[in-house]
Length: 148
Image (cartoon, rainbow, N blue to C red):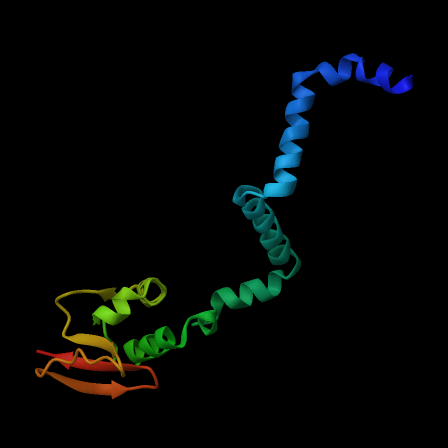
């Protein structure tokens, strides 16, 4: 039979070929994050290369991209800018939410979160209000308070 002739061929006995076949099967069915991230990087570079003018405009436009941040973070950024604050604190409830905590720290830069700051952001629903703090400004989700 022809099938047995193919099976006996030297090509099927090669370990390198089997390694490539098994790697291909693994990548096809399990799709680990490494190939996905490499593919995403190539897609991003391709989009930037094809829309270079839009990319350049976004680089020079102040506050571009902030629309994708959570609304509470957008409110905190707005309050930081309006009151020209260089440092701030956030409440325990905001700190407990990793998404909000990370986003405000990275998007508020060069303003820094500091335990020495007198200005603090709290949620409107946050019961953790100290008696020595006064409200500076209120938004839909966040309140800026000044604490002595």
